[in-house]
Length: 78
Image (cartoon, rainbow, N blue to C red; front, side):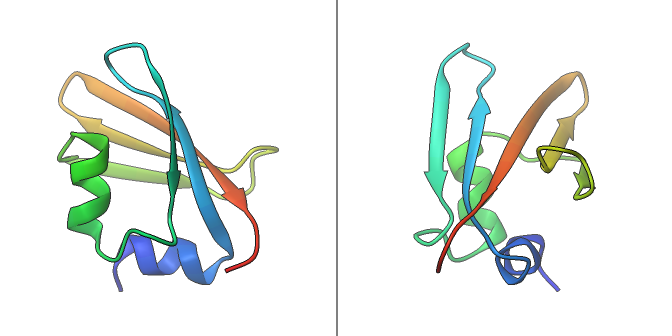
């Protein structure tokens, strides 16, 4: 199963993160259809992805060697 479809199935509809350039970004997961599109939006092809669903604010952590992006997951209606 693709990561994107899994987090959508869990009810997440938006993602918020600070990019490596220091800017804040918000993504609507409704508009993203594949993992490839998600990674293109992040401008990062991760070598590892960690999922933390039980945190107070659930998030993904995408790691590509020394680069790490922490992505806050937000639930809403699809």
